[in-house]
Image (cartoon, rainbow, N blue to C red; front, side):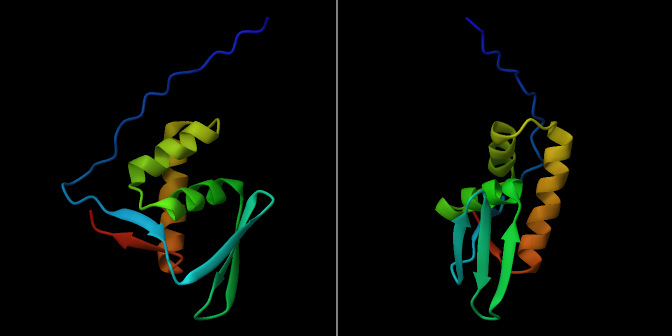
Length: 109
């Protein structure tokens, strides 16, 4: 019988403040999952977007309730075999893009 070995990941928490922002999917969007990608329609501009599987996991996590950066990082680390620094950098880049395009919004804690 094969053993399943889980690796422990040491995650250094991101710097947080008492009012750490949370992020959620902009309620003015329409979006659906098609296979393993999120397809998003920004209704105001009728612009379509699609996210790769990693972006989709992050986007879906923000769809159910507002999430902090740290919660989103934990989601990525739980789903993909990636080192912490790469996951953190990619998450930050994606969040900035999603905020710029108004696909997610920041919610104060």
